[in-house]
Length: 370
Ligand SMILES: [Mn+2]
Image (tube, rainbow, N blue to C red):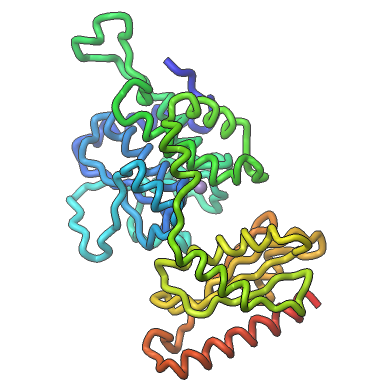
């Protein structure tokens, strides 16, 4: 038996959670990730599925909206064969009395567009308003996967099978000897590693370290390293080259560049390029942006190590208040073109739209940093 991590919030809510699930184990359960799931939310969703199955809720599914487009996230899905599927918005056949669990997100968030009312929320982000009808397993730790893993370690049931007669009269929800446990441990470990930015994020707690330490003993080394050192598709280098060619040297020591039009399924190259350019010698602040077709929007990633630049203020100044968020020098923005659609434009008009967008962003950036 592995000792739980001992997160106080998980401990306090575990019994209520187990009761709610077992009382409704014959119903359909949906585990919902936030849109465009990242490794932490994918791992949290499959971890929760495992917990539901352990508690006898067989009819459970993990769902998300948006895209899993980042090559690392796709590698995770492929290597671990994680059972998560797209929510068929508007076409989902939901049996009466179905129950919903949100993981790695809460209600009323911009990046959660599955419009249902959850009975359970497991999250590690700040939650502004608590709804009394929802059971929250919430603590501001570094990764949601930490809370999910602690929950799994905390759930122990009497073994009612014949094998239970022997030395182990009890079963733990996370059992390292069980089929699939290596994949689950790998997923949760990747979730913690990425969400805590390799344990460097300010939000990292000792619970995250402890969870990772235990998971490290039970994961698949081979699959873990396949995901960490994921293969990336050629377009990543193509867009890197465009970003490099379009850079504006006059803004040094800041690095600002636009990559033009980029398909929705490839838009994850924007933050990846921003991360890479941030490592360039002497660079203090990076802005990488592009027009994402299919989304009708400009997407941008901002990074800064400058003590004099507040990332959130910079995002607000350049992309408008409410269009982006930042913490610890890392941020992103999305500005939707509400009145016209680049997808339906002539090539000439698209060129003009790009030139206008670029000029506007550069002008505002100059004003904000000058
Ligand atoms: Mn997370």
